[in-house]
Length: 202
Image (cartoon, rainbow, N blue to C red):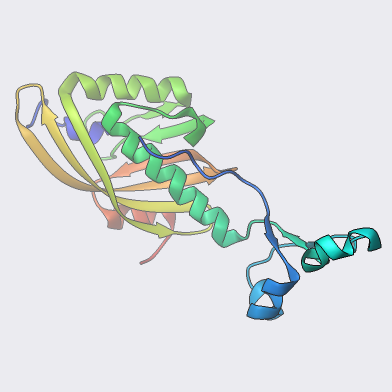
């Protein structure tokens, strides 16, 4: 965010999906095949067979399996969290459910005010400094590159200064996740720099 402040002034999402397992019944497994089903399963827990007295009512669910979220589902949740954090900038918001309490935010390395903010209070201080220069900010995530616990986002910014001057800019941001929240984020002038910092390739 603060990389835009070089040289002074220049020109409600839906709730996150709940965590939890996915129930798949025996009929569904027969349709798609056990190998396809197990392709996305980290762990399968078999339920106990239905009691005879309930067989007529629950025969279809006699072997329900509880499937824990796969790695693919966890990565999808990470993107939801990051997207919500990015788009909340338009309302000058910092949704606490998106950030780890020990979050770290490092500004653009080649900016004059290059620094690292620590914790939610640090993010609030960073946002206050941005609001001193910009009247409004629009942030649109246009691309995500995912790795193991790290995501790079290409973000398009549209900013309006208090003087009325406007600026549009694309930046690359790297996000490291912990337990479904943003643990660390680093701001870069380009996607290439963000990918290098995250150890990712396109």
